[in-house]
Image (cartoon, rainbow, N blue to C red; front, side, top):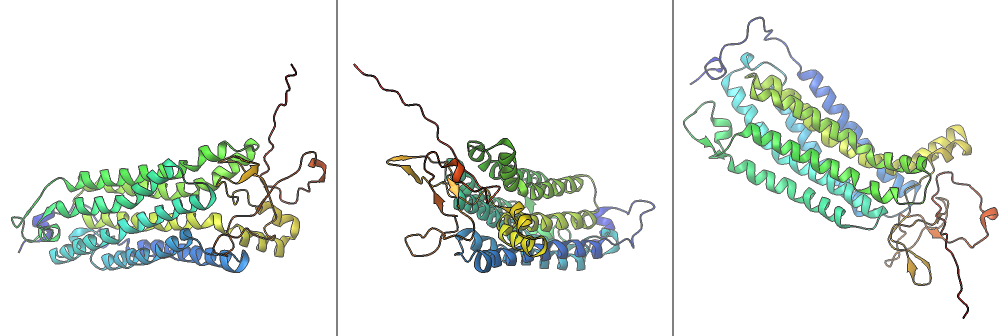
Length: 374
């Protein structure tokens, strides 16, 4: 049987084969995983205990993403036992084979968790805005991304077991295409879908009749997911070393870390906008009522074509928002909707309006009236 030196060549001079990044890697992955789980729990507390509203599809989808994320963490920790975070020359070829088996399984939980988080974000947009063409496109790309990628991945090694057996039986199979290019291309497509999802609500928000500062504030809420995209880009950076460096266990240790951080950050960022009621409650209990108004929500209205007057309706128009503790709207099933109830203001009532919620969205409709007497 071939040895590690036979497959990967001799170790570079002056390399410390006892160097070990595994404990640090494991600590980073466990930390972000814990933050993601806490964020999901707080999301449910915010919905059920603070807002006392129903749980929507976006909540359940994000909660479901914790399942493959847990599998991702377990697979990463197992990979550490087979050399991830250590130099490949400090292990046997059997350890490398086991690491590749772990990587093979890892892909089948990594891709689904990315897809589920993306779908959860789109459903969150649906909860706030009316679904448009771009949102449907993002939903289709998010659902199709893992399916297409997994099929393409399975078609690369022939047979599939060659993915890990190539190190002990180099003549036992082949690759249909270069896996390195596949990894980079797949990662780039993932970043593209992320960016597309994050910019979808920006044009909608920018059309609202709000001051520029408030538009920027609302947009920044939707752009929190950029942190997950940054993790994706860092992951691509570490993957580029696979093309030139034979020390695959050392490199893949960093790749596994950022592959776990990426969806965990996605879950965390998807939950942060829903924690506003908890932030209000905490701020009020610690700093008083005035401080709690800082967290007044400016994005919780529904723009699903509410009637403004008579038969006229605006697709992306927002009317005055009531305070969060007032009655919520009720849907056809008798459940309380998550959106804050919308109310209309009569003309010339400007002086009677109390600015209780600093970030409330209030749209004025100006029109000109003319008569032609003949």
